[in-house]
Amino acid sequence: MDAPEQTVSNILEQDKLKWVFVGGKGGVGKTTCSSVIGILLASVRQSVLIISTDPAHNLSDAFQQRFTKTPTLVNGFTNLFAMEVDPKVENDDITSNDGINSYISELTDSIPGVDEAMSFAEMLKLVQTMNYSVIVFDTAPTGHTLRLLQFPSTLEKGLEKVMALRSRFGGLLSQATRLFGLGDEFNEDAMVDRLETMRGIIEKVNNQFKDPDLTTFVCVCIPEFLSLYETERLVQELAKFEIDCHNIIINQVIFDEEVVQSKLLKARMSMQKKYINQFYMLYDDFHITKLPLLQEEVCGVEALKQFSKNFIKPYQPSLTRGTVEELELRVSLLRSQLKEAESELQTKKKGK
Image 1 (cartoon, rainbow, N blue to C red):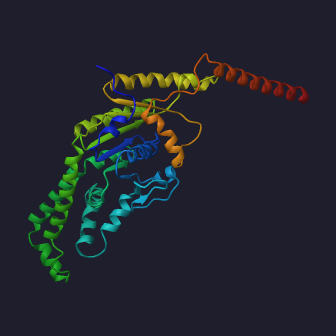
Image 2 (cartoon, rainbow, N blue to C red):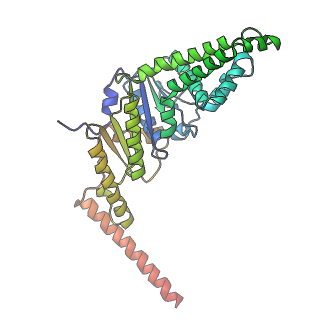
């Protein structure tokens, strides 16, 4: 069997795809990768929305444009939009201080994870009313992403807790609300209806998440032990949740051809090779895309477009060992080192 292509072209070719999650350990380049995937999808799909669910938003930095919780057209595009969602802020917006919403707010504070679940449900409800052909999620680090996938069961626990309170106290809550003049709309039926609605939205989307034709997850990592370990954990959890995952992006790779004289880079490259080989052994049926370690950050639309070439065609180092260009670079570096040594020697002689 032929090895899968080492690009993300399979995602671009999947024309029914609705949800693309980009996740992994913190600091591995998830935002850059989700931004580039969004740009590539915009070239083949009618409309694309990139949503950052990471509380430490970086989408605005990546595109060098201010984004908020409202979808905003990305500069230079006609069909690419971006928004940044803060779960806590969204939840504060949802749970205002009147009637049932105020009580729901109190309830969510007492059940770990329900506030995020309800916030995410509201966001999904909003997104579903928008007409985007594909949505890319720039997720928070792994732990937060896994909680996001557990939201249906979290809401189920919330409902169970409300029902338990309901059966335990009977009509006591309704009597209390009437006693304090809060009105009939503020009762346990309203709470259950609200949570049931939220659960309905989450379950509908969750069924879409489990459909490999509609949803895929892209794992971003770097060639180091902790990142390899976390990627394996993430892949195992995704399999448990029945979510398709066939793409791994290995970022910040040092290519042999570009290591000239630096002992530090050579040692780093040797370490990376060991972990890259392990990635290929563990995920031999995955599309593994290797991205180079760059001298500068990838910021702004033009830089992202330029970097996107490495996602659809395997990266080729600019230098090849044994070429005239490589020899000229080596000679140039040796001359530079010689000048530095001569200058240092002259300084020492003057010091004497």
